[in-house]
Image (cartoon, rainbow, N blue to C red; front, side):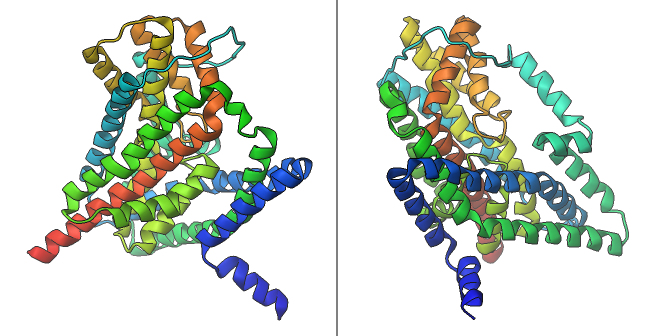
Length: 407
């Protein structure tokens, strides 16, 4: 009886409260017993890996099932959502430019041995994107190539629209089966986040940020402006009423989890569950949420822009406002190709630095700085990216409902 009661409370209680309890427990363990806290990181690693393992097949089946059962005249509205995704990402890069101009920052650049292979230009980014589009489905799933997975999901779904009702129903049943598996994994979030918090604090602490407080402050402030000012303005423009219930719900129930998993791809199941809870149109969010995890990268655009302009300030390169605007466009386009995993945006910094003739050696030092501050930067970036997927999807769905009600 007691075991049954414990299980019901563990799996059926308020997820946000249990996550908060996991955070508090992780902090206490890191302070009281650092060696045990480092070992507890195992729980966090297993949780994130479980999400990453199920996310690719989930995206493939959800997109395919949604398109297979989609009929002409149904109310999936992907085009306005994509417009909001792109507008939000470009606006975020512009805000980052303004913040960097108002609060110029410099970096402590030193010779650092960083072995990475960043894109060498916008042509290479587009080339990589093209090859991701035509990746075979097995390779895409194994390597977490969500662009390729989306392409195959769309192709499979469109092809299955002409299949028999029984075949399309089977595809829907498979997507529901994977969704149920994901829900079990999500119920383990408090334990996983407990491990992530305890392990990260025990290993890095807050002293790791050191002299990078100013650049981190500019980054986080820019992300807060997007999350609490710009996104609400975009939502208000779309639905013409108070946007904060949607925005705050998305930040609380999607942003918090994404903050600790640090992966937009891993947070896809969380966003899908939240959209279902909000009563949004399944035909729309089943496609828009995986798509958002791939191209809706406001946080990544901010990271690329702020760190690139910090490098120019450090090197004494004068950047006029028109050139900074060009940087914001490049950062926004680059961010759309950022990986859906932790730290994916940092490898695109050398691309933006190339606009100002900054050598790869220097640019890679900036990337190294990014990894130092990524303890908070990457978490906040992912939280903004992932929660915005839900915010814009909800805005378009609610605008459509309001339009139908008025006609």
